[in-house]
Length: 165
Image (cartoon, rainbow, N blue to C red; front, side, top):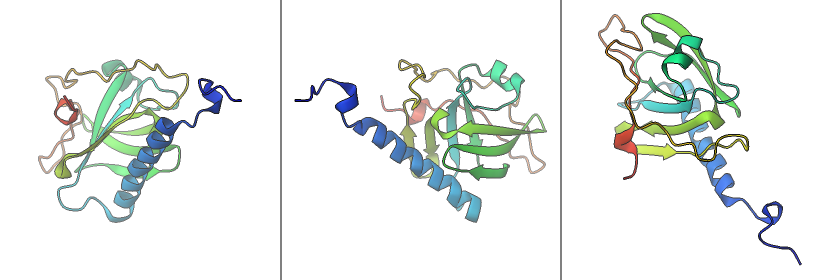
């Protein structure tokens, strides 16, 4: 008889649900790639900057050690997603930077326009199981995401308002 405490014999519903919900993130990004952002929709995407496969400029890793939040709303370019990762170009202090983020590195995906948010645990077995998103506001006194000609700016924000208390 199988010992039900053996992890190899247990159906990992928690992992199945995490992977299915990450599919929601992928699908939402795919729809934006095809049709753009409709209405007031916009995404806050928080990810682990030190996760394997994250490819962002070194100065951003230094400024946001551990975790960073990006906003896809007004100015983003070259948005792409596949089963493993997403890519997007954002402007930081008026310098375009390409970001490559494995979907497994995403810890929070939110669309505040419809009060929708998902919070994830790391998928990778080697990831820290005790990882907790940083509750501090990473925005500094300068404009981390740059300004556009139309006065709208990108921003890095804290997502405390979307977390269940």
